[in-house]
Amino acid sequence: MASQLTSETPMHSLLDFADLQALAIAQLADIDDDQYLLINLEGPCPTGTELTKAGRWLTRQPKVVVGFSTDQNNGLSVFVDVIASNPAELNRILSQISANPVSATVLVQVLRTTKNMPVQDALTIESLAFSTLQSGTEFASWLQQYRKEHPEQTSGNPLDDSPAVLLSRDHDDLKIVLNRPDNQNAFSAEMRDALFEAFQLVTLDKTISRAQVSALGPCFCTGGDLKEFGHYNNAAEAHLIRTIRLPSRLIAEAPEKFEFHLHRACVGSGIEIPAFANSVSATSKTYFQLPEISMGLIPGAGGCISIPRRIGSQRTAYLALSGKRINASTALEWGLIDSIVD
Image (cartoon, rainbow, N blue to C red; front, side, top):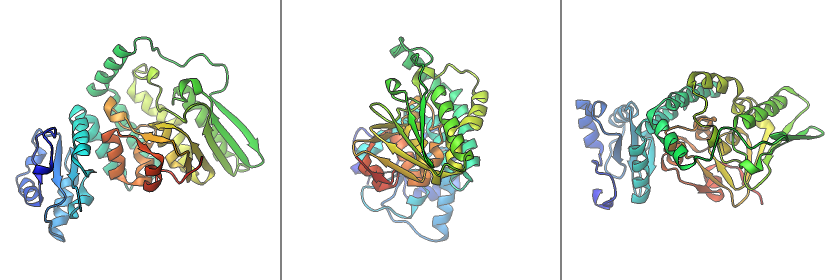
């Protein structure tokens, strides 16, 4: 099995079931310095009580549990956080974990913890974790590098007197259109507040039966407005703001009333928020990406909750830990979107 890995793969033991039993008895993985556990999902694996005990031990580990299999997965596959099916994927995931081990670990802890939680409670857990990482060294390091590479960018959006979100009504339908095309409809504080007010109208006005959400410009949304990152220094207060004014919370209360129509880039919050709705369509050239781990963060607009409920925790972890873009056809196959409409 190990011979299938390339020389670029970070050096680490590929553990099979017998290795896990020995580690569990010695409790070694709880105290060592490794940033992940790499599990062989192709080797022989017992069933029943022994498998259950091993699985429970794996899900208690304070690190990312990575499964590797190029063919058929064994019984351990349901207990790992993410699965790589080829050496290139594995290298990408392990490199990302090694570069940002804290945010990678927090991601899988949130995914594990919130899997069966009520949505509103789960969103609170995600927000607390996101706020913690905002005060961490990984985010600080990314922010320092970003500002060094983009010294021209300052806090706030370009001056625009028009509404950040356009509203129009046709009988019982409400159209909600993101209106910051020059800023790629980034999820800025202005956009967050405008969407929250629009979604609040949908949930409060019983005469609105459907809200259709789309966007002007070259793409739907490129995620958080990077110009605003790091300018709000109180992470605790930021958590409270997300608790009170996160648009995702409103969609989760009435997902059947929302339809999202996506196009081109849907990055970070650009897919985290739509994923709460019952109906999500996209054009054939749309792509989706969760880049937050590379910034020392996790998805913080609801994506740790909405996306797993559509595609499962392992695929969500794969998107976040690999940082890879997926196209509309893959998103449709996985269930991240419901239809492709050009």
